[in-house]
Structure formats: C-alpha cells, structure tokens
Length: 298
Length: 205
Image (cartoon, rainbow over all chains, first blue to last red):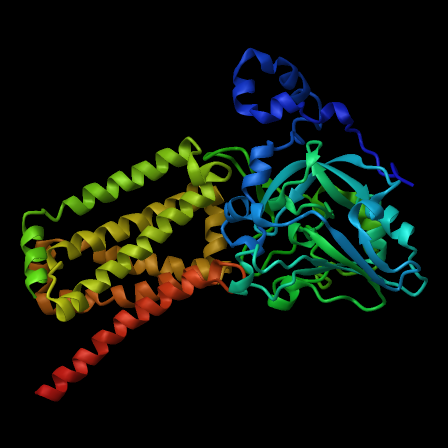
C-alpha cells in the first residue's frame, strides 16, 4: 500500500529537468520566470531541490575514498547490474532476490526530502523510491522481528576505498521495525527521475529523512529481519559519537561539533547557516520515540 | 655535494620575498576559485577553502621544520627562506581562522562556543595563539632587541605549534584516515632529529 505519506508539496514543486540541469544560469536569465514563480510559494522556497550536479558531486561513500569528490571520481567502477538482494532472518519468504523481482508490482513515488548530514550540511533531494514497508510486507515480516539490518555491497576490486579500512567494511546499518515501516522511509532507486547515480548508492539505497545521512545506507545487497539491535558501522567505529538512532536533533551536539545549525549546500561562498530542525523537520515521526529520552538514545 | 652546491648557487639569486608573493598568489587563487565555485569548490566552497588554507599552513610548517635537517643531511641550505616560510605559514593559519570564523561559523558567540567546547578547535586555536608572537617578532629588529638566544628560545614554540596543528587535523576527521596521521608522524620525526643532534652535541663536548 503506497502513497501513505503526503505533504503540501506536489510533483509541480519538483524543479523541471530543464531547470535543474543548469539552475544558476536559468535563474539569471528570462527562462527562469517559472522557477521564480514557484520559489515565491510558501515552503517551496525552503525546499528548492539541489541541482543534480550538486547531489552527485558532494558525497560521503567511504568505499570510494574519504574526500567529498572521491565518490564522483571513483564510483563509476561499481558494478550494479546484475544486482540481487539477499533477504533473510525472520521473514516468511527469504531468498536471493533479483532487484527487479523484489520491486515488481510496487509503486515508485516521488519524495522531495531534506537530507541532513551528521557533518552539519544539508541538501534537498527529489528522490524516486519505494516505501520500505511495501518491500517488507512483500517478503513477509515474522511476528517476533523487531529490527531490520542492511548491508552495503563490497567489491574490493571496484571500490578503491575498501582497502584503506577507514571503516570496518562491509558498511552495515539498521532500523527499528517501526522506523522501517514508517511511510517516510523509502528505498530510493532514482533522483530527478533518473536511475540513481553510483555515488548516491546505486542501484538501491535506504532514505530515512529524519535521521543523519549515514543511516541511509547505500548500494544494499542484504536485508535481514532480526529480534536483536543490529550493529551499525559508525557506531562500531566510534560509539561515543554515533548512536544507533542518530535522529537529527539540534539539541544534542556531536561531541566534536554543534548540530544546532547547518549549511544548505548550493549557497556559495557566503551562504549563511540555518537552524537545524528537530527530526530534520519531520515532526510526524515523534510518536515513534514516545517515552524515550533522546538525549540518551542518540 | 656538487648537486647541493649547484642548488644553493641557484637559490642565491632567488630573493626570500618570493615566498610571500607565491603564498599570496596561491591564497588569492584559491579564494577566487572558491568564489566562483570552480573545481573542488563546485558544491561546498566554504569548507573546502577552510581545509585548503589549513592544509597549506600545515605543509609550510613541515617545510619550515625541514630546513635544518635538510642542511645537515644534504647540504642544501634554505635558511634564508625560513623566516618567510614561517610567516607565510602563520598568514595561512590566520586565513584559515578567518574563513572558519566569518564564512563557516558566522558569529562571535558561536566561534567562542566552538573554541571552548570542541577540543579539536581548542587545540587549533592554541597553535594559532602560539604562532602570533613568533610572527610579530619575525624581523631583524626583534632579534636584536630580544637577543639571539632569547629569540631562538621563544621561536622553539614552532615545535609544539606544529604538533598541535597535526593533532587538530587528526581530531577533526571522521574514521581512521591516513593523511592527518602522516602529517603527525612526519612532524614528530622532524622534531626527533633535533633531539638526536642535541644529544650528539652533548656527547661531543
């Protein structure tokens, strides 16, 4: 059952392809009248999506190097076809699914989401994706399952950052089952109606917009349903700095930097900071954490 | 040694102020590229410029520390450039700080919070403060006024400043990354060569 999550934005708010290809020049010229009209609307200005160029050339994907431009340089080597995903653990229909088979019959939706990195920068990204709940319902979650674990592909010969062991690869992430089933949580397969670029996590990645970006694991090859809280890569690397939940929270600082503000990518050299919003501006997820102290469950 | 002499001969004609010109040109060039979002500055120019200025400062600190061992081992004498290298390093630290304060953090209260609350900023700030008196006294008048021995003693602050600079870098990156470790190891190695010479000198006496 798709289309459970709605907001005030519609497809009309997604920048047309002609505009995103070269936003700066179009805004400077007369062709941009339509785009400027959009920007005048409430909300739309704040959620003006980043350009495809910005989205595809400033990335963290340590399997391809730690520099922000490294994934764009190196990710072309990733082999994304054929692609299969192992679904195992507490599911009714475990197995190795070809990507197309896993997604067959499920609807791909447009989701214009804020994306907040733990490093205190952010973008707005027009994803195309499938609600994770739809995928999980398709494979059949067993009653005792409490968590979903994810794993990124490792292709050592194609991923030049893997040998450097900046992290303990394969990259792993996890969600509580209710987080995974929330209609905001999607598995993205595209951006701007194009297949998702390798550096953005081709061919399929998680997007959890109210959590820091590193939770939204890329290039997924395994989904495991479990009753134990699964290990997560950054938490293994530094448990003091990166918790299991990692919800965007302006009141809980990263030990080494503030999370109160962020810089929206795309503003140039004199871009000003803006306040970071609780749950990255998605208050509808707050009921998931009722009764939890989010200064402890970081 | 013939090679070293040839190098020294060639460098004799190169005035020390060349370092300032090249340093200023590099700083302006990087700023211009950041302003126009060219190359690595395409998407997020603020952070990249901050890093660029910080890293060149660290590189110049390393180069400055290499002058003495280089002369000891190879005979290549860069001593006349050392003051310009050191002052240029300081100016890049200053530029790094200004980008951090004005373009990145953007408010005095937040700068203060960062310095007090974030150990890697505290460490970097300490290195910056150590370099200020060194930059101010990097002129012949100060050497004469202070006396050579006292001046030299004070300018050994370069050593802890360099170590703190490398720790600052190591502390701010995420995960286990090689580059900051290399800087720290090289700096510690260059400082270790100085310990050895002092021991040798003492042994010879």
